[in-house]
Image (cartoon, rainbow, N blue to C red):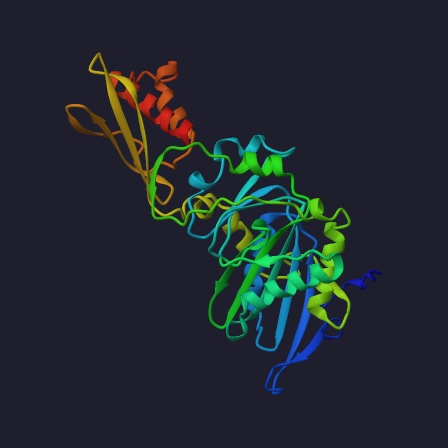
Length: 368
């Protein structure tokens, strides 16, 4: 099959009309323009901010948009998820050449891993025109026509081949706008993906949305001809149909006023971690309590990513542990705060109970 690449053009002002195709709705009363945009950024926070900028500022009533984008290595959790439950948070900085960032998106759904081997596709429409299955059928149709690979849409509306996942999907529905996005596994580093999502089994109680583990496969494993650049054209061409030019956009403050503030919010700890639904982490172990070795259980309750209280359970009953950590961010830094007196840097010496608290917290932090 001969593959013809459409022209890619940098445009100003944004969304120039002659770079859009038009289609009529079923009642032939409204004409819907369609545009394909390609983000120049590979930064997850910038691309999520760009999505949010369009969602907040653009009128999709008569103009639908497909945005194609890629990111450097990152973990992207759903709006209502728990990063400590979903990702290998302790070791993300040591995975991939420059580490793996963690981001929380505005849409729901489960956790995904991105790198340059993913092609992310966002469909923007008005709320009334939102149709997730239509979008997925467009992608599967485009891939089948070009590469002969049949992709199924699962009951959960993932894209699968023989029940093996090649794409996850999520959406944000509002008024008057909506968007649906998915990430296609083209040539993802599966070793880094596995390491970034690898979690130990531990006792954590939460009402946060939990991801469903799935077996995955890269599209390039099924057909070596499939590359990110080619697939970008294939899907974009199907969306534009008839073929037209694509638009490369540079998501800067000058082009998208207000995007910097959105990006700053999305990369802030308060959003990525502080928006986590309240949860508790429990660790059982043998410890020295009142100079006697006993089976202990230690629970930390966390709200908005910060320590709310800590409870030490001992065979004789329950003892609430009171420390100065209430309100502190649930990070490894809390151990350093407690260990400071032990190092002799302060004159405040801690007693055996405080030492036990440090050991309990250390064991909990190691487990998450």
